[in-house]
Image: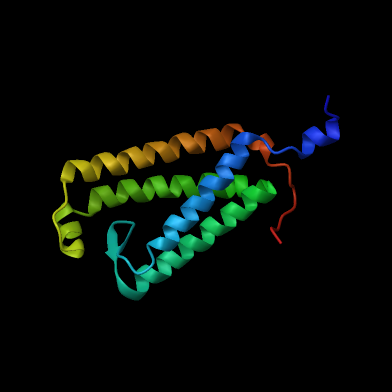
Length: 147
């Protein structure tokens, strides 16, 4: 029904969904520009927060484009980025107190919801990383550079 060349070119549904997810991550990251940014146990505001958000946007954009092009280097970067995000979440939960979050936001924060939401997000990223790890064969572009 399909010749082998067409099957090699066809994009797996999982990779298409993953590409869309990282486009969404880029948009979410860009939408936080100007807001406080928690990073490795500290909450940054002002220019440092904007620089961190900009760097995160660049990484997410690179991951999106690498997924779109099925670049093998992106596979490694995805795993590294996701594991770093998990570590960052755990460090932030350990070192940033809810009182600090309340002070920066200027409103009350539900401690239990803060923990549950962050741990659920970290678990989701961990499961996503497991999926990416198991599907290295989706990344067929062996070129070193994206452009």
